[in-house]
Amino acid sequence: MREILESDWKIFRTVREAALDRYCARVLDECAAAIQDTSTTNHERYLRLYRLLHKRDDELASAFNDFPRSTAIIQLAHIRRLGVVTDEELGRFSKETRELVTGIMTGFGG
Image (tube, rainbow, N blue to C red):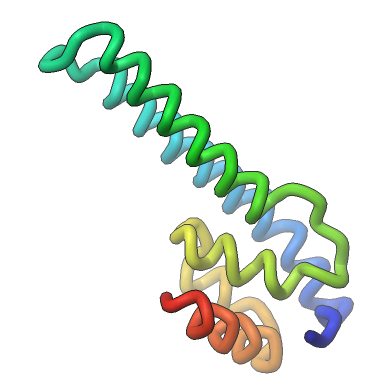
């Protein structure tokens, strides 16, 4: 895997922050929906929330934690797969980086 270009690295840091914020907002919305579902018992809602947060925390760690330049392209593919990087944001990257991300995502099955 090639290291991300310096110009793309600068873009990545900005895009990563926006994507992290979007991801967290989405998870908080999911949590609110789980909490407000009165068709289940309090304990069932608690367990649903616990499982949801555990799963989402694993996703967040995999996609956003520890982002050295050497893994930026893989991380960009991860956060793109999570649906929190827009087409416009991806379009800001070099053609080379976009192609690498697309190739990685094909390997992810998405």
